[in-house]
Length: 165
Image (cartoon, rainbow, N blue to C red; front, side, top):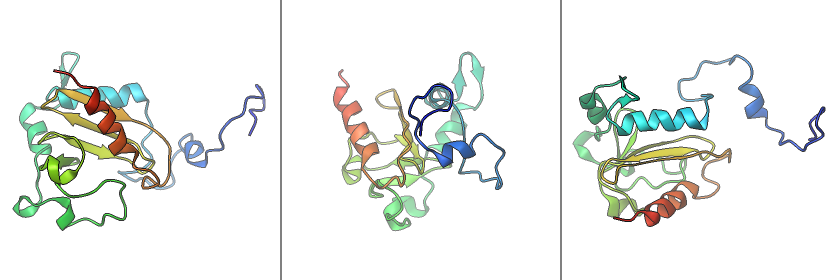
């Protein structure tokens, strides 16, 4: 639809429009509005063990605990999850306190490191932190549902393929 003042074509986005007003339902997992820059800074804080720009927000032991697989028996999400929801497979991936955690890269079938942790959003967004490679990656899009295309895995493959020692 054209912008009323500039005439530029704009995407009609009822989800984006909803972010401009107070939510009708307070959901801990939905409706977060921020900037790509701030999201990357949050991920960088995690990668740095809870510290960013000289300010400590979390202790390193807390970050380590949060990014450790807490599933009973050390199993992966395949034993618990319903893979019909996500675009990513649950094989080789456990779950910590707020993050998926790679426990077996070969089973996960995507280039990963043991201990890599991530989170994905409903609109195909995602981030991952690889403490072995010392890499943080953020991928933002607005593609619903997230299972439409396997974008997160392809993004990770491209980033990992670009790494050199």
